[in-house]
Image 1 (cartoon, helix red, strand yellow):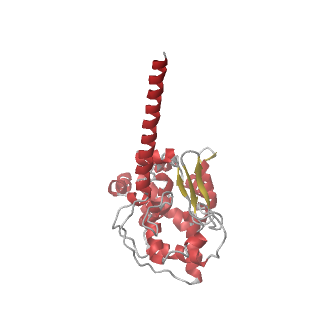
Image 2: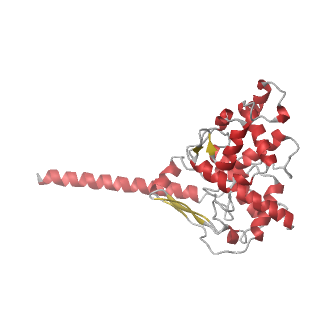
Image 3: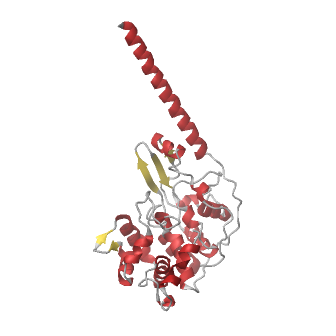
Length: 308
């Protein structure tokens, strides 16, 4: 009997040792991904200093979630994720971070998800920001640089074991690895055509939650934007400004984003978004007056050619 207990004990110890080795391997593999370097060249960008550009930058920074949202109500930083077993990650104090980076380094950080040390960001929506024009990006940087320095939490990326398992299995990816290299960034924001402008606004504001293909994401529990095909023009405007959907349903995260961010859209931007989504998903009510006379088939062709 003692011999039986002895071998059971040896077996248990062996399993514990194997589990320890497995956890050690997961930790090491995840750490390699966390520390991976990304060779993205620096690109010069013009950052204005005039009051009008700074004011534009403040409105855009609010819509994009830099101000009064992900980084705190005044960009002083906050803990964005603190999930037991998964990760604790801060959205750092932008009023201090911006003073540690050159304009070119900020361009690479924002558009490409690459930090000053060459490693990747994990939560900042750089895939969304990668579509920004030089003009809009310059205005946002101008506003952040103009803000007073505040006290608040700085960087913290503490990935726990379940989070590391997610990295090793590909569930969580460093954002720099998901952004295509060499994408053309327009110098200015083209507002001349509602369809083109609408696509630009959608890609720089909606893709954070709804994905680059607008088909929804599990991470944000956001649906495909094909759901907009069921909205009238008035209902869609109400949704964007309040986060209240059809049937007077307050739509969780969408309500929060609408109240803090999307309420700052101009009428021109909302009309352009309606035009693009109506065209993309075949909703005549949202397609807008600019395309009113075209048949339905012509309205949906951008979906086939859209490679976002």
